[in-house]
Image (cartoon, rainbow over all chains, first blue to last red; front, top):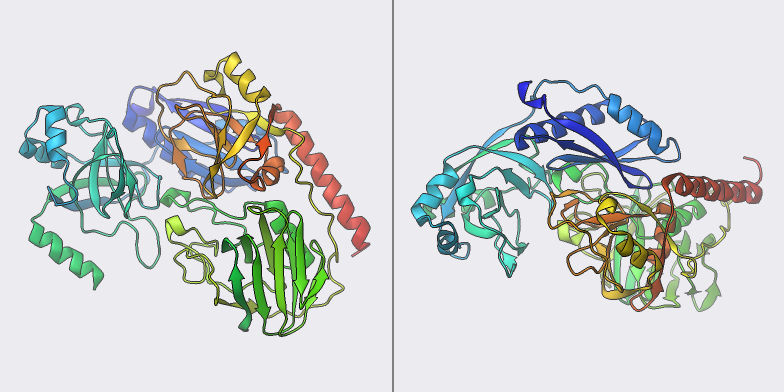
Length: 232
Length: 318
């Protein structure tokens, strides 16, 4: 793949039995693709010493059984890991419905003040592109989506909320996300999404790294209908 | 394996949850690996009742009282503790036979420390995402599958087992929890962004465990330690990672930590010292020593050989 050409990999010690693999380069998207390709190649290889791998934006933390191997052997094997250039076929595209300006999840005015955009423009821009899931963390089902356009960038709030509502759609810096459940949170809120981000039965996250997401505006009525449907 | 209610929780002093070896492989969905805070005590408890390595146990803080409905083989591990079975004193760190209808009272010597109760056969609890460990924040594990802690009145089932008292050790050498020796740390992550002075402060300083200490992380108070980094991308957090947020007060990331985070880290506590850290109570002090990764591994191998040698000597040939 052309955009992986300038991606460089380096491995640092994290702790006694963990190393962290960093990817660097000019394209955030290319870095994250490399992260996920590496992660899938490593987990598929099923090394007997392998304990866990945690991928994030531009890194993969690898924890190993240090009774079996030392960090030098692990580093060597990770550097030599053969990574396929083929995109992971299991990634999904999700269209997430958002009731923008929902009561209790509305910082649109605050965002407008900081970006010099109107509330309507903010919503248009947010819906106007497809986002990649860079990583999932912070809490189960919390997917970090990016990158939002520079003109939509706002920092985290000076005083985080103690309770962000479940389903709140939020932005911070060049990222956007949906809170899977009530939680403390410092991101600016734009609206509410009725879709469950954690599957009731499997408890798995709806969104996983490598997936793509697009947002579409819905009315309050449609939001309430969708919410009721999910409960039943 | 059939099971029937075999113990009833009568009273919990502070907090009690079900734990097993942990929920590995679910970090991709944002679930922490979790597991027992004092892994040495947890593993020893299992060995003593000859359970498999993964049994469900009770991890608790504060006194605990429970009643047995049938006779059971049980072990209690952790720091200094007093155990009474039907008003008779019995020992921790050994195999106990508890008759049916007995009231068991476990009273830790120091409030705030964690203890483990393992029952032969293991406590029966449906796993969620591969583990029965309760993580309330993530709404997984425990009896209700939603991470709820144990409460007085809860009835726990125990898996039936054909049990021979001749299997396994009857006693295990109790673990040393003293905080006199410094906690070993292997430098890593953003260690290179901490100045020599910052590192000297951290590795010569005395840090007190604050009240903000729970299964997610232990916040320490002492000489501030700061990295030169202003911000960084979130990345995977290893167990025992030492985060240094802007206020310079280190936080040691424990079992229920968030899977990823964006504060600079100076390295991680060596796994073989985690149990001592885990059993600290607010107000206690600790110091840290930097060891290189090869030394840490050599230490681990020596400790491991020590435990293996002890087990073979005591049990005799298989």
